[in-house]
Image 1 (cartoon, rainbow, N blue to C red):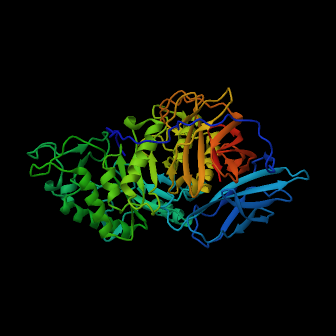
Image 2 (image 1 turned 135 degrees about the vertical axis):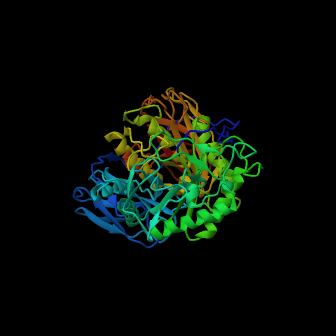
Image 3 (image 1 turned 90 degrees about the horizontal axis):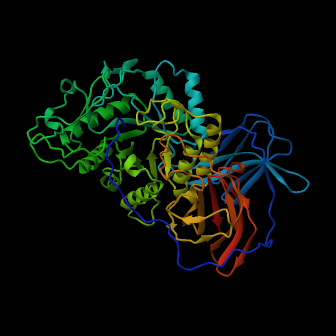
Length: 592
């Protein structure tokens, strides 16, 4: 996206509190053995791909030799699927052939007393289609600085975070003619809209690297963009959107001086334009090995008119454009941006998009908005209750007012914790971390602490994807504590509280506890990078309404690399009582 635009507010109910009052937490007596875990996360683990087809072997690599006596344990949730001894720096594992399943592998040793030391963890995603659990990244620069080594390093980090699709932003020559062919071939280099150099070889190298890691490669373009010279390329003035009924002023997006051109906006529902542009898209696929088209828009504008003075239903035009792109290249994938969720309803209803994608701005900047927007979008897209929930990706730009330096780690991690806890993915990782709507902007950097933490967060999001992202039921579960240090609040978030997000998924109660106890704002944007680091909370007694409990376990991206910790618990009638070991930003409790 190039510009900030007005939002459409959306509202949706989330987990609330129940009127019945649970019994007070009491002292917990041991009801089952509990393994003592020690964290020593010094292994740098990686896999060869971001996701795997059912039956495909996973190749693991460690940056240093595994400790003597090490074992590798593969879990789905709390269930150990397999264990194996491992030595050296590489080994392989073939997961069960079940499709759409997340696993966490952890390398550990056990001492004579039974204590386990965890040295490293990494997630594995077995999914035949990225659309089920998208983890979307991007590429924004394709110039001479992008050597083969640089491309390999950048895609290696994305692969380590299990990013399974890349949006190729501003790679094209012209918006209305993305590939300009000379004698049937694209030139070795050309200028994009900002007059930046684009090397064809770099675009192709990124696509190749993405495919080698099992990632989809999606080319970016507007659904209705035309440059000043579009008439000479066959774009008719009768196809544009106009600000007036007499076609005097074309609707346009103004861009900085020194760029190639402003962008005039075409009526996306105009069938002649759709025929013209579908041929241009086919030229893209003939030239580059892209897997699909990431379609953009610029959000809600003033009333639009066609050349003949009729008002244009722009959201319906988006839906019509999507349908045409799918019909023209049915084997290719489609994603479309809903800017401030404009047109999301019509776009989702087409059934032709791989997942929901919303670019959020100031009108939807509260943590509570993330949940309500996602659930509203999913209600439009998921009409079959037996079908998987349609996934949501948010393009959401952090620390927007900062002009230099590093990202504020607490702000980024709290936002990711909330997005991941509700099951949404965050478009933020690419050839740098995303800071602005103009994706090549890399004024802010990740520091070492954030880069290490973000790997654990994406491991967690991937390993527990079935609990976080599968279709489930939002619940109102009272979660109580007698701790004087903690106030537990049901969603939506409140400052100075620990807020819960509660769902039932695959027969399990999943409770995410999110730490707002030191937060200074309920805006996910952390505009100035001032969100403070939360205090680590430890040994919190909790009581949850749940009958017939067989197992209680927790996991957190903030501790033990996301590894499972099985808890002692006590059943007291309709309630279960246990102690939460720790909470920094986010801890997930699973009650089976």
